[in-house]
Image (cartoon, rainbow, N blue to C red; front, side):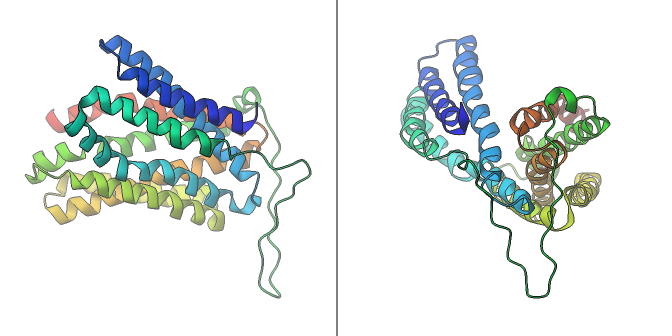
Amino acid sequence: MGPRNILILGATLTGLGMIASSFATTPAMLSLTFGVVAGAGIGFGYACLSPAAMKWFHASKKGMVNGLIASGFGLAAVYLAPLTASLINNFGIDDSFLILGIGVLVIAVPLAATINNPPAGYVPAAPKVKEGAAPVVVKQSKDISWKAMLKTPQFYSLWVMYAFASATGLMIIANITTIASVQANLPNAVYLASILAVFNSGGRIAAGILSDKIGGLRTLFIAFALQGINMVLFATFKTEATLILGTAIAAVGYGTLLAVFPSITAEYYGLKNYGTNYGVLYTAWGYRWCNRYCSCWLLYG
């Protein structure tokens, strides 16, 4: 179908799913319209953008490309959260779903129509190097199908790393206002959500660029080390300043995952089947369901 058609389909499903959610009268119906229809649309978009974008740029820039695309998803919370809250306060939940759904159809569908793969025979320009410096050489990845990928030990190592690292970040992201209230007596620390969004988005860009320079695995090692230390110390963050610092580190660590794991997937298994391959690896992110139980146990015993 090509990325353009899939992105148009994804944007259409997202918009229609949100519009249909405005007419939902039961939790089951809302789960179908918003969770299944709109959720599937978002998934289509997320899976298509990176493969199409990486084909336009030199392989040495895949981290930066993934970081920039992933940052758009992270930064959306900065404006969507207050926008949605304002819409709900002024129009109610049903009309808010309707307005947002129409907005997606009007804005996202035309933009999706501009995305496509490069023409046949297109070769991305190599990055410029300083005079006397060695040219940038990138190892060509062999294209591997998702079935063959499942037979490699690296996939399972990546899956476990992704699962536990994302669970750690999401544990903080999903509960930061509660943590601030219980741990630091900050009942109105809603601004921490904006700090999360900004550093989450910025971390994706920075990590993507860094991975191009030092490699994806080294970048992940740095992120894991910082996140591990941050989590060990998080229970001691009982002031506003330390909570802001801990929140920022957690957001950067989490954002790093969403920029670097796609690049590593393309590096290990090639671009041809990247969308499917990363989709399979991305199931590790779905492991976050355990966060609720872990978070409740850590917060309340």
